[in-house]
Length: 289
Image (tube, rainbow, N blue to C red; front, side, top):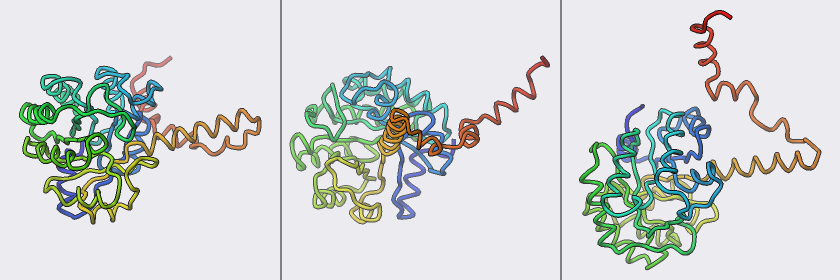
C-alpha cells in the first residue's frame, strides 16, 4: 500500500492542490481507479449497498453487510482507502468498535456522522440528527480509541438540512475540539454557504459535489478557492455504470444490438482483472495434465 490517506491529504494541502477522491462501488471500479492512477479512493454506503444489494441507502443494511462490501473491494485494490463509517452503528462503544474493525482490515481513513439511525444518503429528505452531546462524544471516543494514530477521522454533520447552517457550524466546531482530523458539513445549499463553511475551520475540509444533489456544482479550482481541501466524488462511477448497463440492455431488448462494440475490449478486460498473472501461476506451478 502506498502511504496512508493522512499522508496523501497532508501532501495535497502542502502543495495547495485539491485532492480528488473517486468512489468505488465494487471491486472492479476499485481496480479501475488504481489503473487510472488515483492516489486514494472512497467506499460509501450509498454505492456499496446499491451495487451489492440493489437497495437504497436508508439504513436497510448494517455494519456486517457493508463491511463485507468493503473487504471485497479492498481485496482488489492496493490504494489507501477512505470508508464511510455511517454513524458508527450505535453509541460510543459501537462507534469505537466500527473504527477498530475497519482498521483491522486496513482502512486508512474513516467518516463518522451525526445522523440518527436509520440514516440515509446526505442529499435525501427525512434525515434526523442525534443530540450534539452524543455526536461529540462519538468523535471524541473514536479519536482517542483508534488503534493506529495514523488513521484519519473525518467528522460529518448532516445538521444543515435538519437544523440550519448555524447548528451545523457549531457541531463542526465541537467535533474539531473533540479531535476530528477533518470536517464535512453535508449538503450546503448555496455558494455563499460553501464560502462561509470554507472559511470557518483550520482543519482539512471535505465536500461532495453530487450531480442532482443540493450542493452547487463548482469546479475543483473554485472549491479550493473557497477553502476546501478534498472533493469526494463517491457516486460518479456508480451512476455512470448504471446508465451504461441500462443502455446496453435497452439496446438488446430492442433487437438492434447496435451497442455491442461500445464496451471494454475483451483483452483489456482480462488485463484489468489480472488474468495474465493468474495464467502465469497456473503455467508455472500446475502439474502436467
